[in-house]
Amino acid sequence: MASYKELLDRLYEKVKVTESSERFEIPKANVRIEGNKTIVVNFSQICSRLKRKPNHLAKFLSKELASQAIVEQNRLILNRKLNAKMVNEKIELYVKEFVICPECKKPDTELIKEKRFVFLHCLACGAKHSVRSV
Ligand SMILES: [Zn+2]
Image: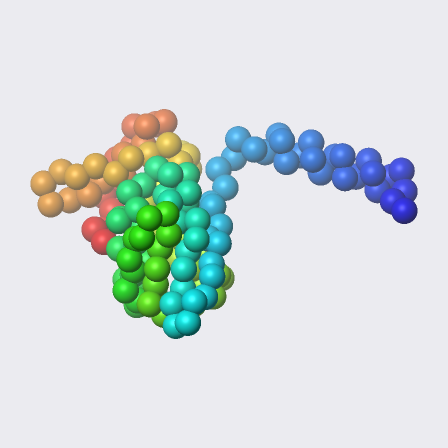
């Protein structure tokens, strides 16, 4: 049975989680292997959380993971066997490059296209940084 102190600690953990809930957390991919394919089951959720177009993230993952990537309904299908860690590392990379503002570190950004260039525009501080196209 848990001691009173343990219960308090657990309660404290919960409070801490609530307090830090404003901080942006990178969504984790829910990965399933089917044959030689890797399915990211919660792909559309990840994209809406990041406020990015599924095709943009799919293209990025396709390049980074050297795999074909097909968006099918809410899922992403990669035609290679990959583990969740590999996929999540790339999603983190994507967030750092295409979602988080380099100036104020906030995720309230959008990608805008100007001529042939793509910029990460921050809605919080107004900063604009060019990003590579995927
Ligand atoms: Zn900013």
